[in-house]
Image (cartoon, rainbow, N blue to C red; front, side):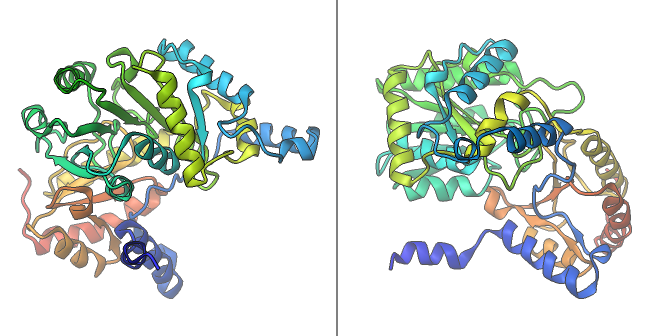
Length: 397
């Protein structure tokens, strides 16, 4: 038995554990009495184009072809459709022969890190970050280096980043819009980040890969802009999942794009293919590969998330809680009114409020609230938050 894997399985993700608790608790006392904000599970239906396209595929296609194996790196028609969309929308100069289709964002991350890192290599994580980044990186034998954020914005502390890069740094993961904070790195911020990375890779004499993890690319508020990274940096991988944009989290379909401008782009794509082979991530779900050409560029109706963000942020700050207004994604990062976020989350749980402590996100003192939930759940939860605010004697800043 691999003891490290056994420990990892026994520990479980804090998010998943809370999600499972919420389901069990709802069965005990009723779902309307449990305010589960634990997991980023889209709460809006898939767009009609998805249902229509799936119906056509299932009714009109040869079943053996529809459900059969595709090429290991993905169906060429789907890869061409994705590249054409990226070039049309972002002027990405995407080459379909440098696209690798995957079983979602987690597979994309695992494959990418395996393709880049050798044991002892360093990967930089910009705090706060999705907890599984650490799991995926350390599985390769890589060393995780955490860079703290600017606490007023949750954007990177660029001075700290410069000091964190070393001759062993091989990759940095960027997640914008960010899970868990909802922050978005502006075009100017991205240019500054890329300049820092470029200076270090020149000093190192080898590529320093920017891994841009973009499952929330379309989930932006208040006119915020999410710049496409290939316009600023050559040695980058763009990772995407259709889970959030099309409300298909359980179907597991996404991709890795190697920038056509990258140093030895073909060699990196071969490493991606090799990592996919070694990890068993070949031939992403075929039905959903065939769906992509009909639905690329479509999104679910995100208006409920925008409404939820306003209701939650305005409601909690009016009670005296402190948070940075999210610019994107569907999470609010709430400052804990006591230093121990786990203790605060436990007190919230006693009022059936299920909030994820921030410790596993690489930053203490906060809780993540997922607002991809029915709007009525937020309205019903506000009295419980008000009770917490009174207990902590919060006052509006």
